[in-house]
Image (cartoon, rainbow over all chains, first blue to last red; front, side, top):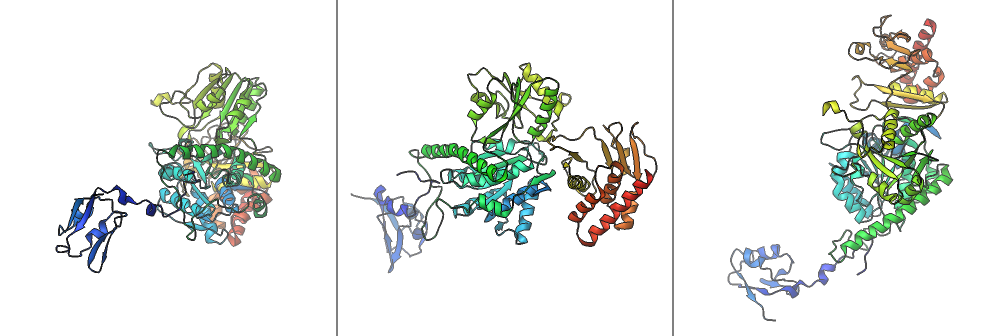
Length: 85
Length: 386
Length: 166
């Protein structure tokens, strides 16, 4: 990368940085316990959690496995499991 | 046309003639008259600019940085504590290479609180990446605003600049000054063409973070740009001279330096008093001269070395104190460095801090100290209160 | 400071170079302040305060009791004092004293006890350093409409009074 005057850069770089590759543990949700309260969606630092048709989905391209969702889930519905790659 | 005017009002006129699109500032003594006048001009429709009122100097310069990043020509002015509150943004403006011009109405820094003049405020930010010009009288400081914009906005420069002048001593003095017309300034200073800008249609981020792999290179680029700023200031000063008859192509001005046995080096309004003192000394057979520094950043080391060549003793008059440094003043070491290896003795004299009046007899006393080889000291301390 | 600006402006309009500045500090109308003026055929470069003036104008004679207002006044210089009395204490030897009741005059003509313009008229007459016409021009620039004319009238009146005394 060559320097650009004013430390300027094009936007959208974060999308190119697929933080999913950093992951060691991955989140798994137990929908029996999940109340769809949305805490995990709000607090995910990578905005990689979403809800669709009553299910919680993790975007594994960007989930870096930090575990904040599991720690903050009020119903303890999320567990982090070691991922086999 | 020559007219008599308060220094602050002359600067406000100069700022107006440069057609800034955004002005943001926070009032502080002794800068106040400038921004009051500009606010009036905007309110009266004399100046077509956004005057953004803010709650602090930190916000003022932040507004200026954002406005400049959108491609606008931007003006601000401050003094002393105000500049210190801006300090974080001062560095950011330089790093983001935004060619903002800001008047620094030089004032001492607290504590103790002082509203009076010295140059500690701007000198303290000499490493920020803003070029720094210093004016000796109302005419010079007025003209330096036009030159500052012209130099700053060159695409091989793109650095911000301070135009510094002594608070009260110049800002509050009435004296004759020639204010160019709008047509003349329009011919000298074309509209600002940004190199890049924030635009919703072509998104861009500015001031991105740099890892250790890149940070040093950014600082290097800023330093290289500062070097080119010197040439751009010189070129703009020459062109200004051709158009208006007042030439500022040199970063320094030599006064009666031929055959001088002792030379003063100084910045700002003190130079007028020094010139009068030199005339007196010359009449009494003391061969004294002055090298006035107009551009302190970038530091014109070569020009200073040439001007001082062959002078045995040099007295740097410092309206600042670099607390704990060997020479006391911040300018002295750079002058000394410029003449290193020549055998010239350079001494710093901290003088006139916090508005202490400087008289011709003080200048003569400093020359006597330099000739005796006594220096790197405070001059004129009231030992009875120590 | 207004008075100093007016002298400098009038001197400039009389064709000389001039410089006016306050003893920097707290500036509020009516508070005790000092201001300085230099004029010269050549450009004025000196920036220090004035320690040995040729002329001193005292706008409020009550200051004389507290402050050595005549300090440094050159021999042969002029002290112009706003007072209703004919004599003033502390005037150094060899100095010409000129008194004028500028406050009464200002009250009469301007309706306000602001003595800048009356004293400037007196200064022009006492020293001959600035022309009355230049002072009038400076006043018309500074003030507008009937206020300008009132100030011009006050300056003229003081000018004539001092001229008659001399």
